[in-house]
Length: 189
Picture (cartoon, rainbow, N blue to C red):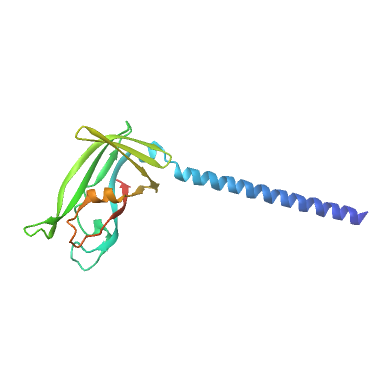
């Protein structure tokens, strides 16, 4: 009888241990899935504010300032993009300042120059991790959507090749030939 009670207690404890572990595993998986969903869901309030461009990443490293060091972050190589920012307002409107570089400048078309910045206005929305900007340019509305990666005080997004060409005007035979802007990161100011 003693042996029977001992085996019953051992069997009960083993069953309790397995059920407790499997319940923890299920709860851990649910919590992990919920955390992942929360990481990809961005609230409107998370984006409201003024954001300055902090990284403009290219596919190749270049040495535009001729200091002997090449960088893929173009902000380390030129001040042309320093004015770029976006102000996302809580009334769901925005103002952004964008810049460009011209690599066919100078008397012999072999120098680069900063082009005048352009200010854009429009409306914005965020759903999940996707930012939608409705930009009013010369009376026409252009819609841009970007999947964001959100940090504590930053957000970033990838840039398509056609968008990259809006930032770098290249005649095709310069130090930046083949350069493509890959991503942008903005930091809350």
